[in-house]
Length: 175
Image (tube, rainbow, N blue to C red; front, side, top):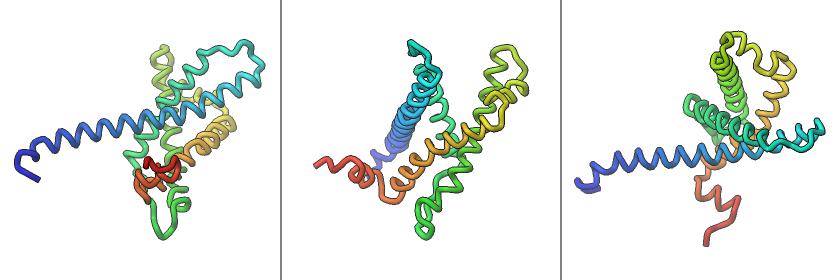
């Protein structure tokens, strides 16, 4: 590395980190958005609501963006670690449960803040998350885990093999 390239390296590194962070957030939002829109569509058809309001899908995409943000916060606080000794699945299972707890806690916090914005009490609004029904919260947790688990497996494979190899395996080589 030359003396003239050193001053540019940190700003290039910061720009690259921001660009990579944006790409991760966008990809994760699209991934969650696909799931949440599918779940929204299923719920709307189960309720036999006709016509299906398109606004429901907008809310699903907003929720996907928020969930992606929460997931990236959880990854920053508790980074993915794959042990070659235990393999990807065993290494990530406990971490997946930690991520679910973090995301649930952030969802409770979000419900409290949403309540404050609406002029309600913070704690009461937090308690209203999931309509305050433990079985509904458990169901949400299971569905969320089923959504997060493939993402974590992908990230584990990506960490073990590298981004280029992982993408080549999944989508073919660019040759």
